Every structure is written in C-alpha cells, then in structure tokens.
Length: 558
Image (cartoon, rainbow, N blue to C red; front, side):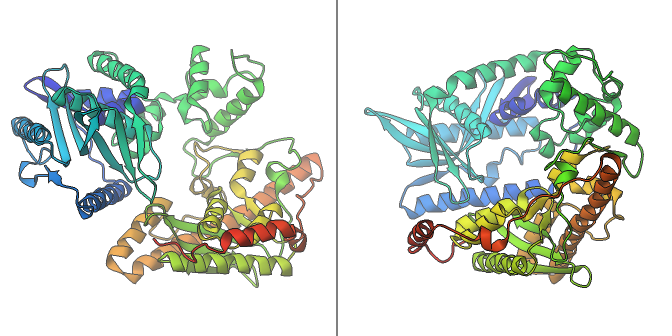
C-alpha cells in the first residue's frame, strides 16, 4: 500500500492483510499517508519461506518450458517496481510493466510470466502481480486464467483471494472474465482449480469492506490473529496488549470469549481475575468461565516474577492431567524430533533425539539428511522402542505436544513400514504427551504453555545458542548451504536440551502428582498393554497389509 500523487494504491496482498487483521490495514494506511513509519523486522524463517517459494516458482517455470510451452517473461530486473526508489519512479515502472502485460495478452502469448496490472481508474487504485497467466478458450472465446505458485501442500484462503483479484484485472484488460483460477501447490501436491463463480460473492463482499475500512477514521483494536506470527507490527501490538492488560493475554481464551466478556463489561485481565465465582455472563458456560478466571488470577499473580506461579487443578480426575501420569519405569524414554517442513516434497525429520536412564541421563541423536536416511532412522528407532518395550513392559515414551507421534505416523505412512509396531505402541498407550498432562492438571501463570515458557519452573536457563524450534530449522538450512559441522553440533545441543527438558518436566510433574495425592488421596495410574498383546493382528488384516505393500517403492525421494 502506498500513495502516488495523493492517490492510494493497494494490492491483493493488502486485501489479504485486511482479511487477516483489519488493524493491519489501518496501520498500513497510516504509513502510506506518511503518518507512521513502517518498522523493520528481520525474520529468518520468513526469508526461508520466501526463498523456497521463489525456488518453487522457478521450478514450475522450468517445467512449463520443458513441456515446450511458450512463455513470455515480464520479469525485468531493469524495470523492478520494488527496486524503484521514489513514488514517481515506482509509478512509472508500474505503468510500463502493466503496458507490457497488456501487449503480451493482446498477442495471445502461450503463458505470461510475472504479469503486472495497474488500474488507476478506480478509487483506490489497484495493482497486481500474477505469477502466471495462461490462455484458455471458452466456447471459441479466447481469454486467460491466472495461476499462482504456493509452497504449501494445501490451498489457503489467502491464495484464493489473491487470484480473485487477478481475475478482476484480467477482465478489465481483456473484457472477458476468467472462469477458473489455479493454485500450483508445492510439496508434491497436485495443482488445484477453482470455479470463479463460486468465489466472487465472498471476494466482492470482502473487497467492499476493505475499501470502507480504508476510508474509516476509526482505529480497530488489534486483536491477536494467526498473522501476528509474521507481522512486522507484532511488537507494537504486544506492547499495547500489555499496557491495556487486554483479555487476549489470558492463556487459552478465544476471540469469541473476549467479545462476550467485553459485552458484559469485563475488559481487562485484572477485571477477569477479580470476577466473582458465582458471576453469570451471558452465553458463557460457568465451568469454562471459572477456568478462565482462575487462569487470569495465576497470570496476574505471576507478573514480573522470574518463575511463574502455578496451582493444581483439583480434584484430579482419573485419566486426566496429573492422574494420567504412568508410574516411572527404568525403561522410560524421553524423545524429541527436529523437522524441516519445507525440505523437498515431504519435509524431513532430520534429527531424532532420545534419552534413556540406564545408569544416568543417556542422550543419543540420530541424523537423517535425505529420505533414505530418514527411513532408516525411523525404522531403527521404532525397532529400538519395540525391543525396549519387551525388556521393560512398564516403560513409556515421554514427549511434549503431539508433534512426535504425528511425525511417526506420517513416516509410517510415507514409507509403508513398521505399521504393526506403531499401531501396537499407540494402542498400548506407551506415548505420554506431557503438554496434555500440564494443560489438564495445572494452571500456570504464563500466556502460552509452550515448554520454553514452563522451563523456569524446573530447570536453569539454557546454555545453547539455539533457543527455538524455528531457529533449529533456520540453522539446519544454513548447514545445507555451508556444511559447517559447528551448526550441527549446535542443533544437537538444542535437541539434547529439549529432551532433558521433557525429562525434568516429567520429574517435576511427579512431585505435583504427589501434592495432589497428599490433598485428595491416592490416584490410579493409567493402564498399559503388554507388547505381545498389542502386537496381535488378525491374520486376514496382516495378509491385506502385506498385499498392499508388495508393490510399494522402498523409499520416497526428497
């Protein structure tokens, strides 16, 4: 979003931003008018995604050419809109590239790459940059349809909205409205087509609301949304939430719950924490409200403390929270995976880290740098768990959040191996998700129950250079480019600290379980199936599995 000669110019990206967060549109409008300066933000993960996205786009371009399809490229580095310095230069660049696009469309080129559109006649003016525009025929009527490459393996609403905007531009230039749009997906997923007629009612309504918002003088409140994770304005909004003591800072609260509380006059976390236990709020389940009040209280009491407060959820119910913790066993395993979601077509689980307690905390990290190694590490780890389970029938595998079990199931399906073993372990309940235990069994004075937020409760500050999972991915990407062994050493240390954190958290939770026992009496432990019982599979089912796998490839390429 920017202004040329006092006229506002917006794009499909601005429309997508509005769909994600109306406050973002308000801020960008202030920047375009010179009332605010856009903050600078360096986001290594975002840069990685952009690099991978450009590679995906380039690969698709090469694939078109390899098919013998004629492509007219308007990707001109000498006439780069983004590289132009002054508004006048950017406007002239837009006009030139839009004119080149119109000329290419008039000549019926096979495919136009990096088509640029610029409509000064509307208010605001609209610009657009389609990855590809492909010629089609509608009952002898010649026209074009837009295509965009997206790195993800699924279609997002944002991608559809962008393409709908390009439909507007193509109709304006050619006089014929495209009937379909196409998203060229990454990660080996097939391209998907969508009928424009089924999308334009929503798109048109959103566009109207967007234009109304551009003309509004009233600032919308910056409610937390998914886009916050990549937004350059996030620090500004986070400061405002803290200064306002906003309800959105309460862990696990939803936007709809915030709205209901605000309608009832409860507008801050402090006000929520002081809410009477018998207070009724319209359309609010009393039990849910009670949990939010308790969470707000423990967060308020933890403010400015290096170690957050916590409280037990009482009474502990059988099978939930601290009452679901199994009995510690000499065979227990503590487990954490490092994965790169954008490696190749399927991602890559590049490091499996685990520890046993045989004579002390014994950590091992198993690397996988391609699909063949990934399969081998997966199979070896599953075999290790099965053998250990037979040796220690009371063992469990502890992890935090469901990533590890999800990854194991995905690898099982991807490579068509160790199905019976994974099924046996899942039915035998040997995996223990400590996030679930924490979420159900305690209230902790933090706004997010990520394991890093909980660590002050049970371990000293980490010593490694890497402190976040996203940083591990970035560092692994750096290793792919450089081959620097020190990078792998740093990632391994980070993974070891994650595994150790799960171990120390389990021990801390065992103490909290003892606290519950002291207050309400003994608690049952969760049942555990024996490995031999869990491995029993119906003979006909095994026959079907073997038949389905007989023609399956032994490995899947990256």
